[in-house]
Image 1 (cartoon, one colour):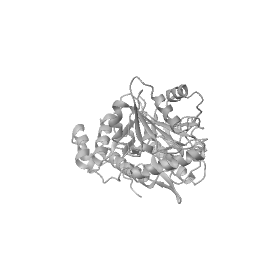
Image 2: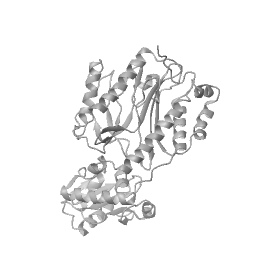
Image 3: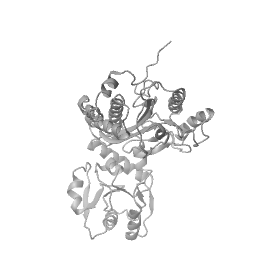
Image 4: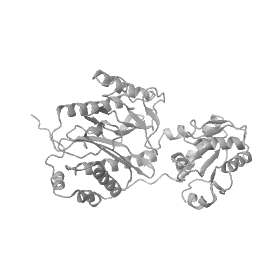
Length: 416
């Protein structure tokens, strides 16, 4: 008979942790982990290539210009890293020629620091309407009468006030341009995402191996964030759910404390030069898993494999969700999004945003192409008891899907 090894039980890390105060356990993260060598950030040459492709797509789709305000798409196209506020900072990209960056006059020096493409920065003062500046630029470039594409997260006031300046302007979606570009990741983007995933799984393992009775989600979060920073990543989120709270996919504010036999769910991510990771692990603390914990964990593990087997070039990404849900229903969960079962989608796109198109959810028709990146997270949640979520991100290649991090082999080895 093969003897199963229960995670944490009797391990050297666990034994050491039990003799130390929690604050000292947390501090060990930064002492024990050294920074990893990170890939370089996205180069100005790659961003110039993105702009060239954007212009081609604009001309192909009959779009005269595209407006992209502060956020990840502005960073993606121009390098400008800027917060979104009531004061407009945006790129205005014409179908021909260089774009401009519209920003408040007093913000110009700061915005210029991260600008990574050839673009003029045009400023507006606090008593001026920035959309008049945009309208003047469109007239100058001769595209004021052509459709204007708005990036899908642009706020309504931008469209509304531009139409006040240009009443005949036709507002259209910029998805055929911006979304089309961002769906497909380049080798440089994939390298940054690989680094982010490598850091996150190491940070999660480091914190998990130092679990002890009495710890709270905040204790674990501090350990994970400290380890992430020590390894060279920028902590993005560290969601930790214990026992009944693990059945709530995004958590609970009720007090949670680890005890022997607790179900512990980690859902964590970081960024490396703007690119994100998203990994989940579920394990049992200090005792052999119950038969029910083991069964549900194994079913979620198989759900991950069903999803990855269904991922083939050209198939609509929504059919991956369908394949997982069909298996879950055959095991007695659901039906559909009902509980006990899987109340959320099987996965989401990921890149510069933790959640971005396309989505592995019933009905998403986006055909799977090489370079697309997704999470694979078909959790199972049993209200009032516990939930299990295993999540690993992957990208599509010509040869098939490839994980950034390998799913764990068993509940006894939740971090591999």
